[in-house]
Amino acid sequence: MGRDALVVDVAVRDRDPATKVLRLCTTHLESLWEGRERYRPTQLRSIADLLKGASSLGSKIIGGIVGGDMNAIDRAEHELHRTNGIDLKDAWEDVPALEAPQLKRGRKDLTYGRAKGNTWGYQSRNAPRERKRLDKFLYAGSIETVAVEGIGDLSGKIGRIGIGLEVEAMVWERHGERVCKKGKKYVTESVTEILSDRSVERLKEWTGCHDPKLVRGKRKVWASDHFGIVLGIKVL
Image (cartoon, rainbow, N blue to C red; front, top):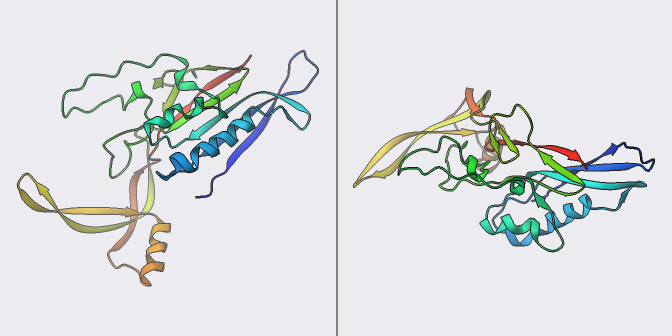
């Protein structure tokens, strides 16, 4: 899948007459499982080169930070930023991790994985068994990370926003039934599938007709299947 990085340089003024810039970047790394070896390391290495570049149009780059969905699907990928050729710092690791609550079997974690810094896996129709810290801030250079005041949910220095945030949107719904096993019996359950305009267009392309079971209407949906993350920085 095609991926890009959006980069902007912000001028930093001090007593030194030489122009300095802080490089800010956002991205969304490859999401496929195969990307853990073939794509994401190369993509992150390219971003690290951008953040640690020597100059930008004659200005000295004194530091850089990237924030976004790093798609760290495999646990080993949480070490990726430390590997040779990347060498970035993970802002979530700037303070010791919180102690995870000890939950009894079947009990819900009301902190939504705050101790692990989780940002994904809670706001989707088919919630996965394993929630993950996919979204990160990685940085290099003369930068100090700080928590942003007023953010109620902090995981280390990183604030998490958008937890439980819903919006009203026009969606397509398709109602049907499915057979599932409960205990030793098979039962039939009613299910409602929610589709986007793009998904409906693809269905029309594949089938050549409009599915009569599709109904359009307003429905509350999560603003995102991810939590947002917020971080403050100081230039040293």
